[in-house]
Length: 307
Image (cartoon, rainbow, N blue to C red; front, side, top):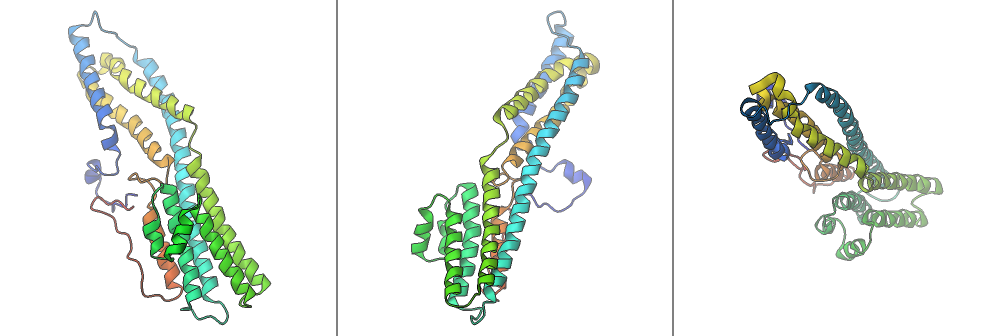
């Protein structure tokens, strides 16, 4: 996620990192060369060079812009839903921490309370690594013992197993008389809410946009941008390479941005900063029991990218 501070309109024109320009630089260069070729053909080989009517390009461009905007809206909806899920998870985790930290008869620094809070943080980190297909061992080793880490690693759905461990802890407190039946039911509902977040994230992660739709827009966009210089050269002449690149930049950048937002849990510059969200959630959990060993906040790198 790019968290660049607001800057002037002039500096914004030359922003590079996070602008997807590096991903489409090669196609834009090819489009510029095609523009030069169209100008050369119109001036030196007019009898052998195709002269395309610009009117169909206008109609196709309008239709293509509508279709591309539909895809961008669909991808942004996935991105925003993912952010809402992680925001809801943070709220549910804090609610669970408050529930655990106020157990009658147990102080906040009780080892059982600490273990329950660590398991809640472990759920968050396990979910982050599950969504990014990365190894969670280092994150989990800070929070739970080595034996439990290995138990978690043996599962296909690691966050789900962490929730099972949390439920076992709540049931154990109920058997010890710390919780009444009503309070136990309230605690289990909080675990159900975390499980709903897990299911929502898995749904987004496991259901990409229809492949045929993506291929159709990809082909149409690139063919349109490739033929565009030959449709413009008859009306704008020498300005064809520049104008063609500018129009191609708009379409190709939309396409590239949508590709990044389609999987909001990835590690592209414009994806969600799951590492920062996970650390913020852990800090919130530890603050509920006045813990001193707080993890440091994740800071943006030199390119204003928050991971």
